[in-house]
Image 1: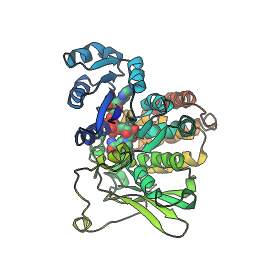
Image 2: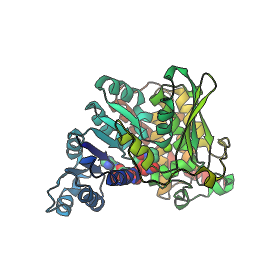
Image 3: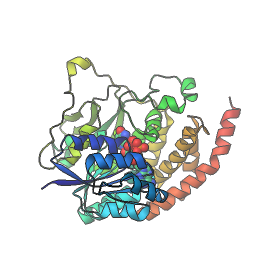
Image 4: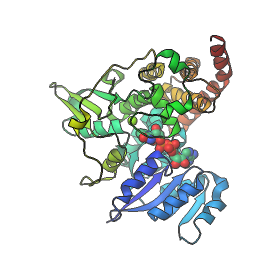
Length: 395
Ligand code: NAD
Ligand code: MG
């Protein structure tokens, strides 16, 4: 049977890498549906190339241009929330959840409720509503396959033992483009500089999160939900070569690590495979050519977002959703030139402090998580002008 795939967030970095994996296996997969935000041309081009059956844009105003771009292809299309729902509900064995940010929560949850295999790239789903996602996956039989490279490596390493014998897990971080910069230089960092990731090419938002180490903080929260470990069983080590992605420490002292070249096609292929691994034409890992691995502890003084994310994980309840919502507002302001790079942790920290009461309760549903996210965005947006002004006056 051909394996049918739906990609949510098809025109983004993960979506395109998924398309590259599918292109290597033209006989193994069929594309059921592709979903994106508003990129008519990118979506239509990919749909033609992959022979998709249905495509949807979340931007309702794009219905007509999308239909025109697909004229004569026989590919059905739609735009707006109901079209996205239609895409999610179409028959598919695996749904790749790769919309960026909180916008991915509702469609990813709908896929999960349909009991599908989910290749989960959208970490925000677990950060904001992890308990609800894991509970609903267990109830519907949906399988969550971690696509984030660290969690994918950890899931593979975990297969070498019994889950109850795990003592701790380590996630590696590349350290991002500012790893060796001093605090003054980081203070003046621009959006273009965050885009120069040392080992991966990714979307704008995750580039900023990788530079601030917020991405690693979100990944600790993601790992907590995926693997059922507490905050003190999870740690981070900076490994600039990004070859080791995750390590499982077992109770007998053994450690199992997941290694691969830093190429998202590798964890994506791992998630798309069923009984057997997919053959992939990617460069083999050549340790002698790499020459050496280095490791260092993350510096939470220069990268306070990691400290804030750890605090939200330890506080639990709704604090990770508050942290994430505030971060999305702050990152958006930074990318638009309305905030400096160090304003990001300032806005996040103040929002978390302001909502420490409201964020105490764990969101029991995706709707509750989205309500808390809206509240965090409202508070963060309200704080932004004062935070940026008072930071500027300190210069
Ligand atoms: P991206 O910005 O490159 O792509 C985002 C995709 O989502 C685009 O197709 C966009 O059109 C679509 N989209 C945005 N808003 C939408 C909406 N409201 N409805 C429908 N579609 C919408 O992002 P990315 O780098 O591919 O990251 C996607 C997700 O994967 C993020 O959650 C990120 O944290 C995670 N992730 C990415 C990488 C990576 O290497 N890029 C690695 C691990 C995890
Ligand atoms: Mg990652």
